[in-house]
Image 1 (cartoon, rainbow, N blue to C red):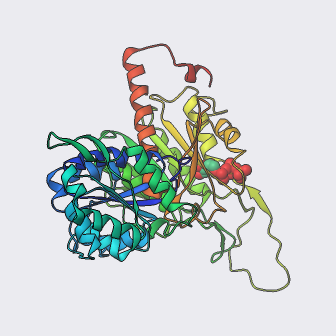
Image 2: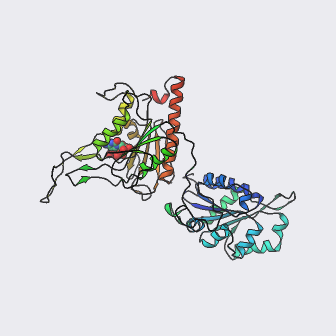
Image 3: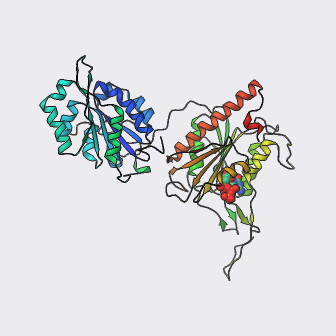
Length: 458
Ligand code: CTP
């Protein structure tokens, strides 16, 4: 999805009815997504005979709704969720039959039911045989949709029709339909961001991380003040757990080094508890280097919010309330920077004295407030391959939210702003990059090739 597109942040329902032009809806879906829209597909039963739901599901990443009574995985009624959340509904192609049903409010199919149940603007692009389009019944139904119900109509074009005849009835050019959706939404506010929308379907992945050991740190650290109090932060572990789940789905063996978390870890991961920065450091370094001195992991993803300061001294007994309390804080060790140095073999006083083989892919997160300007320097200072920076002061992009808006900085100097995504989507896209880098790494090792430009600039 395109964050700069005319439909960025919008949720569009695409209704497909049973015309031969239904195949064009696949391309329409792609164009709507290219404009930045999140799109869910609604189909009449006859439309499912023209084009496969699997294609539309894979491209839209939502379950296709073709049954008025179908429920979402979370128990909500699918088409009602879409009706409530859609910024626009576009019915393309719309058959003569469907126009008749809609003109009379007969909610026998999921497309009509959604249009009736929604306050969203509706765009209708008819497609049918020329004689059918000219029939007074069709003309009256189209007029009713436009004049009585306020639907925008994208008129069909003159051209060769499936019947072999030439006439007016061919589905309008797809860019015109996209333009009509953009115009229908105008500057209306976004109706329902995030969780109010239908759930995203996890893409079916090949096991491109099979045989890899991926270590993910998750949650926040807790630095003790006394036996009952600590300095902590607002991290819940959602982002780290989403990454761990996505890595498991791709066949990786996954270790989660968990600080304080308030979400359950995915089944199948090995869990190492590490609540302070010091124990997290020890746990990560333990995973990093295998007993034979080689790399113990293929990728380290530091999604944990590690404390930057900790009390210099921890009281043995609970501090009693008296006058004011002054705590002296000291800086914590930077775990990721140390891992970066060890991986490169540049750790001063490090036991290895040489680079880790094979070199692991290192990923950091940077939680910033206001500006991401410091991210490139953080990436360099920590020696990581990728740094995902987000502005945690944004309501949709911080601790405990289900969504995240990150900019991905990479060692080659790229900065790629991703649109607002669910944390699961961020995890998946991140693992696409990690899997790609691991494959490149291994291809380089097999050919015994010269170090890449990236490696020589380290
Ligand atoms: N990190 C770490 N050890 C620390 C602090 C942070 O390994 N003591 C890791 C985090 O897990 C994260 C990355 O470093 O992946 C960036 O964390 P962030 O807090 O944004 O960076 P800091 O180095 O702490 O910089 P600053 O406090 O100046 O923002």
